[in-house]
Length: 287
Ligand code: PDD
Image 1: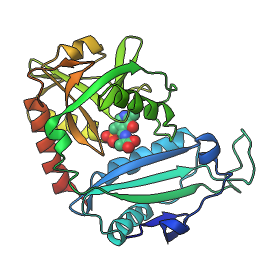
Image 2 (image 1 turned 30 degrees about the horizontal axis):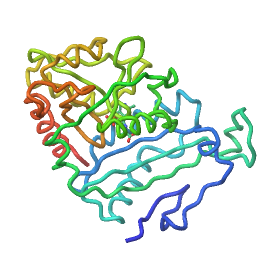
Image 3 (image 1 turned 45 degrees about the vertical axis):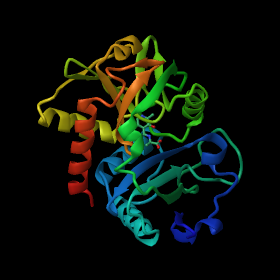
């Protein structure tokens, strides 16, 4: 089935969708994005993603391409047209094209942002076998820019990090800056020691994960202890268990860090429990 995608006001077959070669997203990574998961044909935490999108746009002085209501309508229409039961909706807004290349931002009065959305069909997203096995991660240096709280499309280093992990026989990488773990290449990072969940506090150093916010709330509601503080990779290696969170993988247990097995080398009870709670509650609240 040819996917139907959304580009600047139109629903089109993916083969007919185009953006300008002068688009600043293409030339300068001058754009932001969101990834919203779909379970049972419904959107998970659309509101959270819409609020973060608005924040990313504001931080970059980029005009909104459309209202939140229109965005919801487009998400739902794409899910419907592409018959997505389990999968993802990718949304990207760039500063658009003024028909040339210039470092200076174009005048927002005359240059409209580009907006693109498409779906990714992922049957088995909730019942993911990778979550039953758990992820092996390596640690690498975090050399990204200093505004990781803005969800920009500058994903070259995260891609390189995933490739470094792949070459090392692992599934993903955690990033280290000034001796402390920031986050994963495309997820937030946690470890658990003696029942306490530890994760880095929010700042410009990490993306303010929508799944992170929900999972920390759910952990506290389930009487689990949570501490937001800086932590080292050595602490994580000595942990009882570890996990990551993201909209595309929910709660993903981590079973190995830099070749060191955590606990008995299988997904830990807290990560497994949080994954269950997250999936259950998110599906109930999905729209
Ligand atoms: N990545 N940190 C980084 C660097 C991320 O790229 C992501 C999400 C997260 C988790 O955020 P959330 O819970 O809102 O998905 C943390 C998405 C899924 C991606 O790039 O595909």
